[in-house]
Length: 378
Image (cartoon, rainbow, N blue to C red; front, side):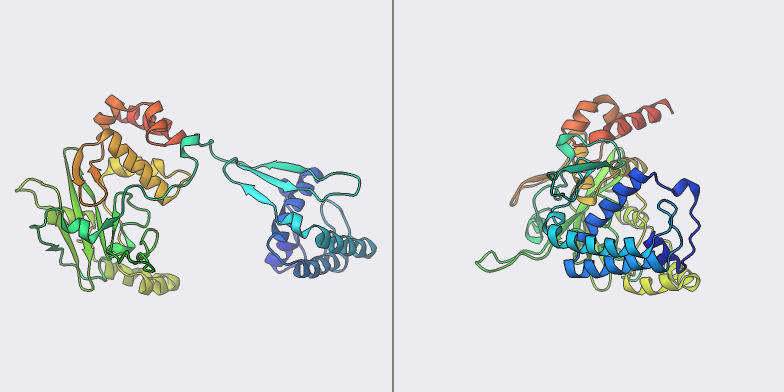
């Protein structure tokens, strides 16, 4: 209630009837909020805040829709009670934990002299429960790709220039930021002597300059490609074979949609939105990828209630189980890169048991299977 007054800048709040909680639910909600706040603030600061809140209730606020007017004497009693309770139980409230995996909140109730402490569980609405095999967030799968490993693959093939300036394309702000889940960061090789540190991974950040991934052209053609960002342009190098008459450079330009001038779009958007004008200066070269529709659809079904490393792990598992092997890196830790399976491949072989157990999709498996059936009917 006080937060609503503060946010609105007014002491007169019009409560909608649908927003008034029953007293029991309101009590649980207030206790839960207090415990979470108390677990993060110092006791002395919290005591001062409670004092101000009770005085505001007693002096300046309108009648509460649940408890009515708040006279001064109960407010003073509330101040004393809150201070004592915070001092006694600060260590207790620090143990409050949100059990995200079980999708319920464990809230310790303030112990009284006559009763032992107990826990009350408040249910929180959540999506369907995960299977045990896919609950814990996982790091990006596979070994770390380094420049030494990459240089050992198809070494006679030079890098080719996409002929695009950095203000028109920056792969560091495009490839691994949640659009596509196929690109792996290529790390710099580092000294393994004692005391040395490995370079910071670009997973979830923007400090990488080279990536390796699989570009799906259609259901029959996929190519393993290395992409490198330089201060002046973006280069690429094919690592797996493809037909001689196929224009891979044109396919990559279509993938990055380089026929559209990003600078002109940034300029137009910046005129319409001052906030975007400031952001555009910080992250130039961000593009929407023109991905294969089937791969994009499956990837974003996997993205439900998920994060980038886990989505990548799921998509890679689908490739491993149902795709075709394209390239195996044998220098260092071996890894095989696979094509993304076609609709026909998955219709013939995919089962709910395999999607849950081998690929870790959890409840998302049924949506994949339903989507396959819909596409088959059409």
